[in-house]
Image 1 (spheres, rainbow, N blue to C red):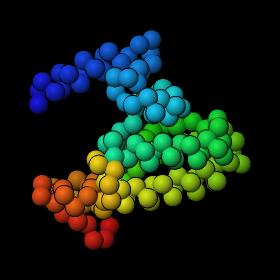
Image 2: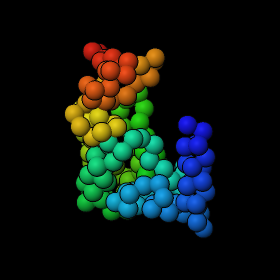
Image 3: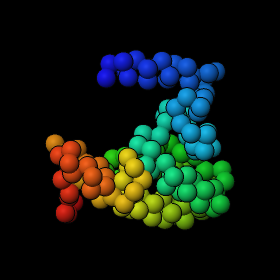
Image 4: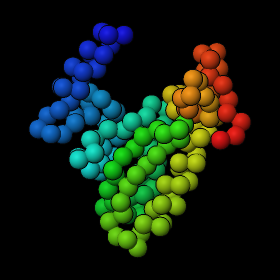
Length: 146
């Protein structure tokens, strides 16, 4: 795994070009518009596995129809669910955008973060993640209530 870490570090260094992450090295090009909206002081990254990337793309597209100038502060997985922190360009749009974000955050608990297939909240050694049933073979257990 150390070789993998070295490769990741090398890719991250390569990705920093004039203060902007070059998506070709870290993320698919479809995520570039989302990364461009992230406030650079928070670090331009999407901190979840690829199974949720299509969900995040859809979320971004829906928000952009409501508020094309919104900003993103952070996109990550926390306690097994998607977290999408944003700021609307107009305070009058905040509530509408928040409703969209809430819907997608809730939806993330039904989609495997790793595969994009159907999933449910699981726990392993105190770590929560939304995964599909195949991960139970790796010691993950379904969370019945949270």
